[in-house]
Image 1: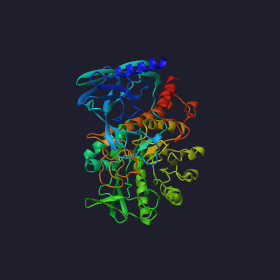
Image 2: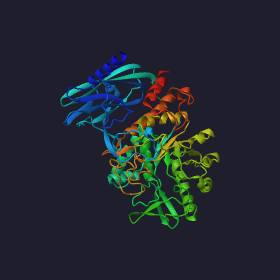
Image 3: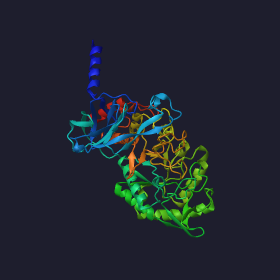
Image 4: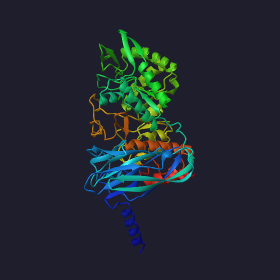
Length: 550
């Protein structure tokens, strides 16, 4: 009898969400992708538990069983205090699943390869097409002074022949969210990608306009370290590199340095809110075997100051460093940047490169004793032997650093894959959302990622189209979604839903801090490693409620 009653109740709920004219509408959390083939949802009401001063997102789904295209519009009429921002979830193609990942660790089985929900367009009125599911993405700002308790809001969908109202309930906690502390986050923003994609000249006013919008977007999504391309780190030679440092060679082997572009960039970033800065590497990546490729301009063209394969410790390069490092130090002191900067030696040295790394570190000890360095490197020797001041192991190696009690940041990029945390096109959204919880419990001291707006082909000056190719044309080595988390819009970047969910994860980190939760609290005991952790929306919802109800 009880099963019959339950069946009837579910049937009535389904019918209630469906209009007589063939449009089904429902509410969904931010942790479920709504694919075109997704079955229509049934929830006319959604309840979210939120902290005061936080940001929260949810989706408004719709599925049309009409044979014709109709226009549909989403609005929130009585929510002015929440400053609702309504965007439309767009679709981009995903031609292949990420390799080396088992099915149970993927999203989109049965729907992908195909179209994946990704970019968020600033549209509140769109076309609902026959027999497909789509959604709007709604972001709300919870005021710090909002009265704790339950608040109810109407979410309206209106189309050619119908209108429905859904109900959002916000359970506002007493907790007021405080800014995240002691956990820097950086993403390697790419200035050359802006120039290549938009076809604008490097450092012209259009370039600065797009760059400012991108830096604001980074700041708004929890990235609080601004990456500075003072040197350009590609092995492939570019006709127009994004090298912010202007280097001149008035006579052979003698160099002068113009910091004007860098100063404009750091001033702009400080105005946005950035207080910390990260500088590009001093030696080429993957081995510390060659000098950094430094450009100058001659006869209106960018040219290298030396052979691209100049040895890492050649007399010419050491002579350059002897002139550059003191000038850099003077600029840092003058601009009050020295104590707010992170410096790199060389990216991703492997086990066999320890000797080269040691030698380069000694060069810096001799020429720039003021410089502390951090690098993405995973061999535990770099940490045990204190070869770098801030080791940044890949998350699959972070356990060794934690076991040895070596303070460290973490990173992930093209890998690790399978059970590990990451944020590809086919990574389940709850898995991405667990990032902040894992960083907190596993005591990482910062996070680094290479892919914010890498909108050109890998290691090439040729443009890519992120709306049609998600891997910088480098699949399967580069999975879809790894090179970027935003899309180029006409006046600034369009967020992806992955970027929104990752920002929510960083906010979760701040909520844990604000609530005074111990990183070893029993609540977090099931987070055993970056591959062994809860990966469901239910766990996140229940854990967040427990934190906010304390």
